[in-house]
Length: 56
Image 1: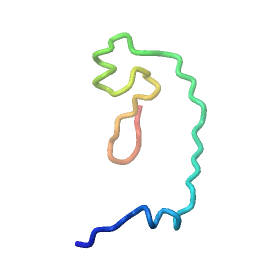
Image 2: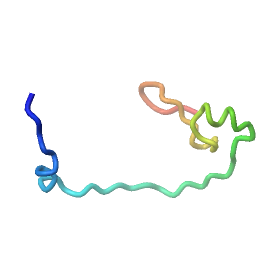
Image 3: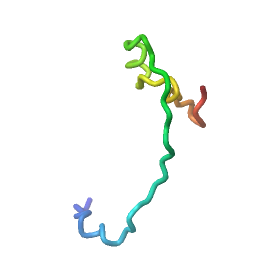
């Protein structure tokens, strides 16, 4: 396997752009142990991965 220097290829790729909408987070979990297990303290962001799409 050949060792590549990825830095010499960076100029070939365009700069990426992203759109991130504003989030109005209005609630937090009172049970922080549960929140840490879910991965967020905001219920609006709790969207478990199901293999296809997020569900609530």
